[in-house]
Length: 582
Image (cartoon, rainbow, N blue to C red; front, side):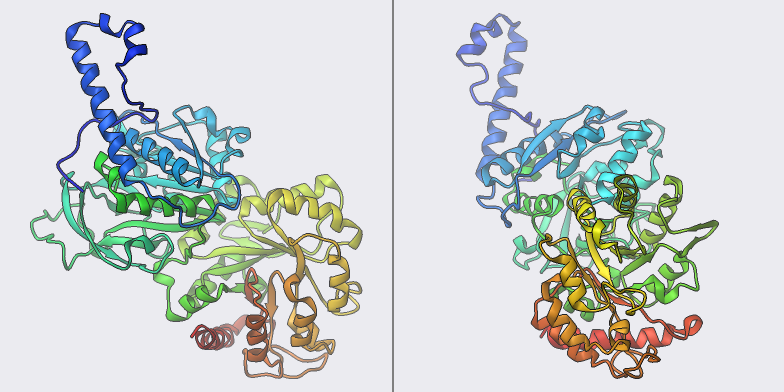
């Protein structure tokens, strides 16, 4: 990498021999001499730049695409002249997708590309150094938000941190939630060739494996992240190594962070959305640096959905959670555990327990001035408050329990639209058997699972036994399966391990209990202290290779004072998962 190379950038469709035959025939040679010289210089620079990019391109993508992928690159600037590297990045990302076969690109500056019928044709959106208030249309903004929250990819580099701000007015905020989606705001920096040493905060992450565990130094214009940046929100991949980088000469101003935390790149989830941001993108030479192109290729494949990568926020990471990530497991709280409280209170309790996941409940009050149940009747403004509360707590909603999904198309669609908007992966319910075929069509359309729950024989005559659920799943696709409730199984005399073995890969998510006794009167006790053979059950899940949406802690006892018992269950699961991950 040569930090002195900061020439003009090339366009996204540069071709060599710009002034050859056809151009001359079209009258290029009739230009004034000064214009001709300028055109020749530009063409030479563009050709040279493309040569440099092509020489640095990765030859192979880190992941095989699951399907044909489309990346929308949006590089509009409003009230700002644009970074010199944006067109270089357009060219580099386009050539990289073409060479590796990982994706194809569409480059646009037209906000109309964010209309729902257009946006749904893409797997991810790359806001390429976009500064300023890109579009104010609330319908387009809501469409982008829902695209991401429902599972689309979002990428941003450098100036994207001030997208949807009024740049000429001092980057005045115009769409706060975009900053929450991206995980940062602001553009405070020092020199545009500042020399820093990089720290690999997560060297084993699939996106950073390209660095081979080796730290490195780099020159570029490094933004210092501002609120809402937090390690409670973001999984930091790279940061400025403050022990190796000399910061002593920098003034004590708003560019300095009190916590000395200068993250450079991160990934995160916003709902189901896969989000990546990196500030290294000011200078064109970034995009003909082979190491950075390999890094960005991994980031693109993460955003597109082909390169799985963990996103639990850095501040939530513990050895146990890292072990669970290696097992493909996620431990969370089922909101029914705290159903005597509001959903917002359940989120806070989940965060206090150090857990990053929760399952929602349709008949629980939302809280904080929202007196409604957490159900499809909520408005977009109320859903905004829920998204922001989850994000602030560093907690992600994975599942959602609703007693019944209507069998008619209109009612069913309403539930799935709601599930899409709240970003869940799995709906848990006990549907009418005759409605499952229609529900499955919506599962496929919305990419959301249906996990059939069980109560006791009286409440769940079709589903209380594993055989009943297997009958309902017969001939169905992989999105239809089971949510075994171990408490009801044990009270009905069903051995959880045998039940698990009967369902096998039809298990989609789990409501885990341990009971003091195996009788209809048995009540919850901390995992591993009762009659439920909890450790054996967890080990059987591992042996069968089951990766449920969530191991849900559903503690249905001592309702108002259950935090200590729930904490003991968390500790037990952590201990078992650490052992299994060795």
